[in-house]
Image (cartoon, rainbow, N blue to C red; front, side, top):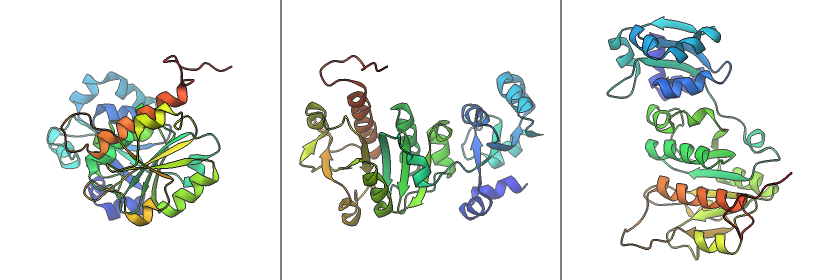
Length: 267
């Protein structure tokens, strides 16, 4: 089965295809016309998820009825749910992703833990971010653990992969973005920036590697270094949690007038 080869990064890059596992993620993929190239499902899964069966028929997707054992050989999880799809890559060029309207961007700089990258994409989606950019040696967004951790959000917003921080910063700055580096020792704090209205414009948050943060060369491309304040006794926050705090704080700031908790309504 050729689909099994997509567990290897080199094959994914060559074919520009990847595997998506589970009903929720496959459902989201099917909602994007032309994204799903082929689906492998068990008869039980088709009966259990009638909506997916209908989407497969509507999209005239090639479907292979498979055994549980065959699905398990494709799936990366220990408890596969009977549905796996071969999908076309979703990443886009940086300039196309940013366009002229983007206001909130999440940048992962050398983030190598698949679960963190997947959760970063999911948090960005939930917070209404416009783009996720993965720079440097960040993990392949088509890694099975990344895809699983996004829970379908990989199909909801543009993802840029394989660019450098220097190129990303240049494109962001040209569009008027303030580039904020997250750092536990930052001179400013997220709540401090909210208080002075500094998050109401175009903002790009940069989240660094789990062990050593944002490299100095990448940090040089950022405008400010910002800490997530810790009010309790925890030593630190992981990348995904810090991303959720920063992205939601910015989403709130961009949707309010700075004096009210009610979202601003514009004509």
